[in-house]
Length: 354
Ligand SMILES: C=C(O[C@H]1C=CC=C(C(=O)O)[C@@H]1O)C(=O)O
Image (tube, rainbow, N blue to C red; front, side, top):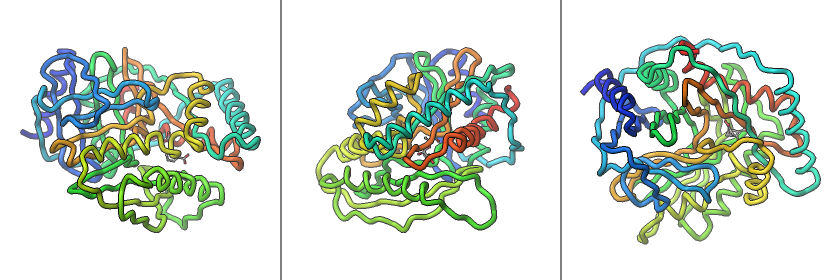
């Protein structure tokens, strides 16, 4: 089956209002797809069944699964085609900017009072689509960000969720696991790269918290040098963390629930930051900054990614979710600009449909 036929399959599935997920792992040209054969909503927090999981930011809420054994699965090779990507100009209300910057200032005050070291706050912006097609969405998304993990998920009860994320929550392959501490953002340029103290500190919080949360769960942890990690037109700081798993069952669930929500998308201390976000952000994140990905071989192999650079599409409206890590040294105007830059990742996919 070729990519075109696969797109026809998912388009038909969407027309019939049946769940599907189509995805391609980081830097892979293999596209895989599960087309569920009924419209049940499978709830599964165990992370032990084969299929594709979609889990929300608030870990007290349910995770959903498109089970492999209830789906037809397909796989194909896909030749990346060059798509034009130009910055999409967005008109934003002055009142929205002021409200967001005030929210950032309040968050900085909270941090300066000593209640938290870092809190990741975000916003959601809606775009009316005039010419939406699932085929065009899949084609553009998969071509635009070949080095990201790309997915389009549809279930009649959740709507479409899709994204191109750079961040691994946990990857397990043959008794080895990998995760990463990703934080700090600047626009990508080919020139010399320098990071400010604020970004280095922000990223350091993430590495430290991940190592602390993994303590006692995995053995032989290796921590890489911190490196630059490009995500489309953005650049992040990243530390790779890897290690070996013991013989016991259920390592995937243990690691994923120990790490999620990481300080890359929530904050430190975790519970304070989570409650602050839920109480103050003013909208429910749903699956944004949750995690998603395939679980295979009875969870001996899995790639769970943090749901970043993503959007939800429902009733011809695309909601794009964007945020940033706030520390005592953050500046509200810069944080607003950062969300505008991050919004471009999905806007460039949507461009012809706006
Ligand atoms: C919360 C987001 O990004 C996180 C991941 C990488 C860098 C981030 C930052 O620089 O603030 C955020 O922690 C988002 O893209 O919506």
